[in-house]
Length: 185
Image (tube, rainbow, N blue to C red; front, side):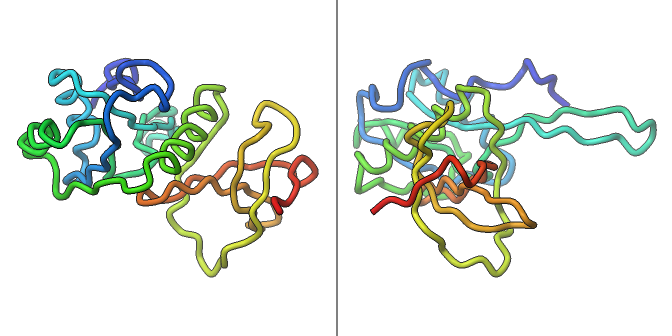
């Protein structure tokens, strides 16, 4: 098991999402290969973004806390590559499928929201089981450190959660007080 410090950086090279020099692609990776692919991309000097979060669990044998750094979108990694370069990435043997991002600006805007939220140190967690929730109202945060972030709001176990959705990757949930959001018209 790796130490928390032995994980790849979430963003390589460390810069804003909109400063990417090539088109974005989405790699659907083999199970538990996200971080290994990130290390491969670093060796290939290929720009990528792998948002991660820290999960704390308790060990069964002695009840001590255990920290794990996990991908926010399991099974996916976003990277930048020109049409010829993406073949080198596919040749790593860790990828099941490559998805071309057709709406680059929209995709970058959504990735930038995730990047900004994690960079602020705000807790994001994957939302894999949304149960019987239906898509809700589109809202924008009006105050606080997340000012300007947009998402879909829903009611889960008595709390309001702002769902930051990234097309093609999945969803991430962030708890936000309902009083700081305003519907987008």
